[in-house]
Amino acid sequence: MLKKTKGIVFRSIKYSESSVICDIYTEELGLQSYIISGVRSKKAKVNASLLQVMTLLDLVVYHKQNKDLNRTKEIKPAVLYRTIPFDIIKSSVGLFMVELARKTIKESEPNPPLFDFLMNSFILLDQLEEGVANFHLFFVVRLTRFLGFEPTARTNTDHIYFELETGRFQTEKPNHFNYLDGTLIDLLDFLLVASLEDICTRKISRQVRNQFLEKMMIFYRLRIENLPPINSYEILKEVLG
Image (cartoon, rainbow, N blue to C red; front, top):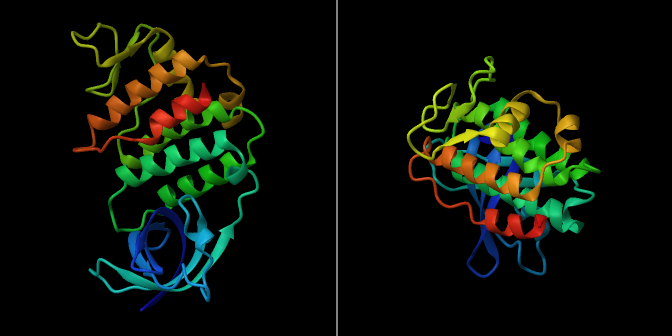
């Protein structure tokens, strides 16, 4: 059965002399794996650059239910990035975003709101002129909404702790270290409700960014069983300085 869909390349692995296997998150079919033949040959019909991670695609694919590996009929760019490939900060942020998405999204069922969020996030990152260093914080917090464990906004100023294990704001200090308080809880509260423009113009120190992201990774690991390490996080910290 042929299906037409948009897709985001999550991972691309060399297979045989000239082929690749790509994990692509699609709008119509959820997460799928495709074997794409001949892309590394001289007579390739598909440019290998289209299969790099983060690439946004228009696809026509062969789809067979319950088959682990399908094939593609047509591959075209849906959106061509103008800045990400040439900006080391944007590309590092984007690689972190796509790795986090790849390691947290497993379902093969379609989820159009999640797909739209991901696709729009990469497009926005490409278009940003300022605030790139804050964009991954926005992404990490807003992605929780689509994964089913978004914190609710703080409604009581007496709630000065956010407990990572329960995902709740509270008044009493937890008897462990998995919580946010002070500047970090204020930042979470801000990221849950602020506009992207406000997020990108907010001044956030390197130390606070790193501390907040480390705590959010704990928050993710507490909710996603066997979540693998996000390797691009260390690279991102170095690039953002």
